[in-house]
Image 1: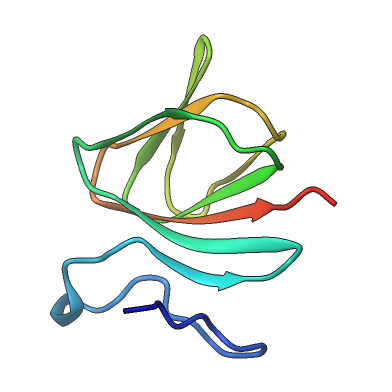
Image 2 (image 1 turned 60 degrees about the vertical axis):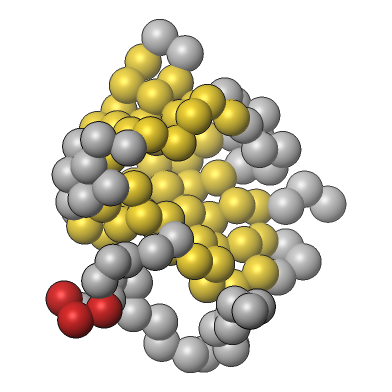
Length: 108
């Protein structure tokens, strides 16, 4: 089943209600310039080291997660945001059940 992407000017609920658990990672919109993803990282789980070609942003919507970089770890809490240049190797670990807003910018 294909995921339905949001339409232009559509309001999207990033953190579903309790009745809608478990929260799942889902693409919100994919455009030729960017992709927005609701990234769910549960406590104690880790997204292994990887990199993407274009720049990314990560905003913590709920919970707490660690963004690991070579020689550095950043803890993201609700309301915090960070940016990575394209090609930067990184990983993500859930400290608490977390929802992050991931935006990937595609290179032209």
